[in-house]
Length: 309
Image 1 (cartoon, rainbow, N blue to C red):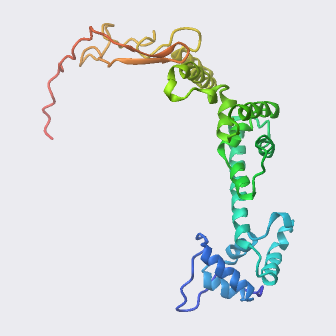
Image 2 (image 1 turned 120 degrees about the vertical axis):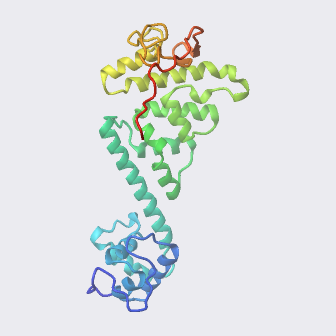
């Protein structure tokens, strides 16, 4: 392959390119690329055949370089060209998949870092440490593809906000109780201790107290996460989290547009509202409030406009 070629493909007349710049690489197209490289085909001809620019083709070839080879970035292209030419059995397809999964995991990590910087959520344990705990507890080690999927899991990053000692203790407890450690159960148990021990659905009575407590913990945490103190105070009062009874729109002393309060539309009479349902995580299930003395809606007191349309 020669180094003297334009960065953009210029297909010959009548030649239909395999793809276009930026298009998804299919396994078939990658097979063709490897074959052309092993045959020593010129880069310009490869660009024309694939309909891609030099950067896209070189980037795909670099994905075939394993990280464990520790090849400097500026030498990866030459390394893979030599390897493909010298080793016809080199498993480049598996390496492309490993590179793709590793990049997905890194993107997920950067995304989490960005979210944490916005919400100021501290990371107390690194993902690699959590992976080590999981493998130690389950007495098995994940292979490359499963490991990359594990590190890209959303549940994993829910665990990074807990200290290593806490994670280990809860992981050991779950393994002793269930004989295995599932990542989703691990994250749920850290967020709400006891939730993974809920009784089966056929004996719901035993589960209700734990469900109620779990909901209370979650709602309390969500209310505390509201960024503005004034909004936080209002939400806690509405939900009954400040020690008093929950206040719905109807029971709030700041609301006066209720039937019988003398307020309402001058045109349509007092406001009429449907029954309200108030749920307080601290006190129990929803309570339906009904009023039997709601007045009927009054007809409009003004005639419809007779303006021509």
